[in-house]
Image (cartoon, rainbow, N blue to C red):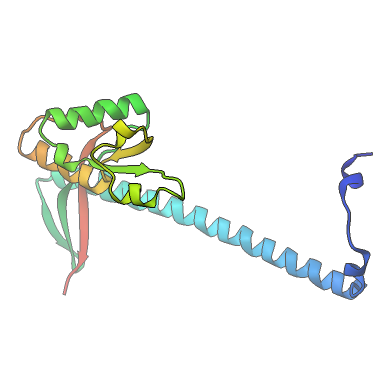
Length: 188
C-alpha cells in the first residue's frame, strides 16, 4: 500500500454536509466539465487542421496556379484574389546566434531596429541613488541586466524592405522565408 494516504489529513467537519446525493451531483458536474474540455480540445484541434489546410491553399496551391497561368490578380465568384509577397523570419533563440544576428544588423546599418531594456536593482534605502543613476553605474559597482531584441513584425518588415531593395541581409541567420500569398477579398 502506498504511503500517500499517510500524508493526507482532513478536517472531518468539512464532510458534515456531504450526502450521497450531493457527492453524486458533484461527480456529475465534474464529469460534465471534463466532457466539455474534451469537446473544446477536439474543436481546437479541428480548427488547427482547418487553418493548416487554408494556408496550404493561400500560400501554395493558389499562388502556384496563378503564376502558372500568368495571373497576379483575378476575380472569381465576386471575390478578388491578388498575389502579394510575404516574409517570415525570427531572431535566433540560441544566445550566441542571437548575438551574431544583432551584430549582423549593426554591421549592415540596421542597429536602429534593435531594442534594449536595462534593469537595475537598488535596495530600499537607495531611492535617491536610483533617481540620479545611469552614467556612472558600472563605476559604482551596481549590477545591471539587459535585454536586447528586435520586434518580430519589425524584423519581417526590415527583411522584406532589404530584399526588395537588393540590400544585404543574411536570410539564413534569421530563418527567413519569402513567399507569395493569395489574398482573397469579397467583391462589392
